[in-house]
Image 1 (cartoon, protein in one colour):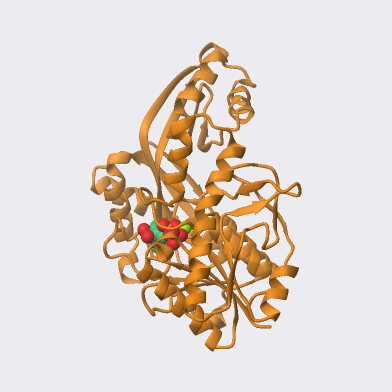
Image 2 (tube, protein in one colour; image 1 turned 30 degrees about the vertical axis):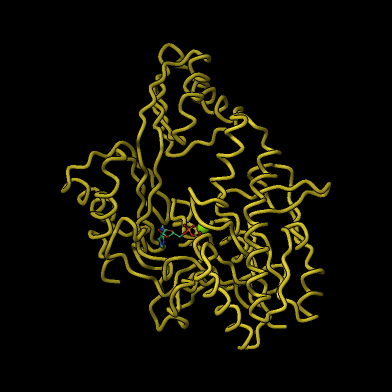
Length: 407
Ligand code: ADP
Ligand code: MG
């Protein structure tokens, strides 16, 4: 069997016109001899009646602290509605489709409600359906535990569903259909001359996704990478070829080893708070440990970490700033939380050991008088913390500086 998994995001299933495009994409794959497994997200974005955010607001309106388990039950509804509507649309077009929940499609997760991890995929039911000529339409973003509790996989989790099914079914490829023509050198909502990348390595796209490019979920990339299944990110609304994510070699790319690019893209995360902890009289070898232990005990994950002899600095999501401050003050530390920050990163598989990358990065920001609040770098990325109000200008300046508008 030649299987393709086709995942359609929120905007791709939001309207009747969009769903007609989805039918065309599925029919085209089947005409090419593929057996297709369809994965769908909830319909539409914030403010629309069946979007995940709308369901979250509904639950919060009756109880702001509603339990994570109940929250997952309502969050699963968005994909269930979407999958039924998509299966119906396919049936109306003469395709023998049927909807399945994540659990019915064999996705088994742990009990970590709201952010569950897929433990295994049991593909026998899907394989049987494909053999009998059916087109399964699977609810993205959800699974069930071994004791039949519904769980959700965290934001962007439908991408993970698609990759996990692709891996379990040994698919030829996994197609991620969205509202942009592929993975771009920057978020097109911020940089108007961002370019589509024809190809990108698993490693680079993982970095881009981890540093905030919401176009694909990093976990989805990791799963596809483990099984070496090609991922293609493309638009539901055009016939452009999209971006191929794969393990690239020089031969595949006409001698240009794209993972060697110094810069592949610029990405960002916003709504970040910088936490500055003065260790004060607490200056002892274990003071920094106490700070991080307190955060981890409260399941607050920290980023952009700097430890100095009498200071510790790190960033957290802004909505946790008040809680984190209280916890640290209780532990006897003086804390300052700087709100409304954003992290801007340049990602490139080939930036390691290339002299001058940092200088170039800092130059771009200096030219626009954008103050840098903190920096961090890895083999394949450099990130800075800036004020949220400087975000768009910083992303645009770095995109220009690294020549990304002309890739
Ligand atoms: P879907 O609902 O289809 O999963 P998402 O909103 O999750 O769609 O992802 C697509 C969006 O990701 C695009 O509309 C775009 O604004 C945003 N995006 C952010 N960074 C990038 C990037 N580097 N390349 C392409 N799109 C990006
Ligand atoms: Mg998405």
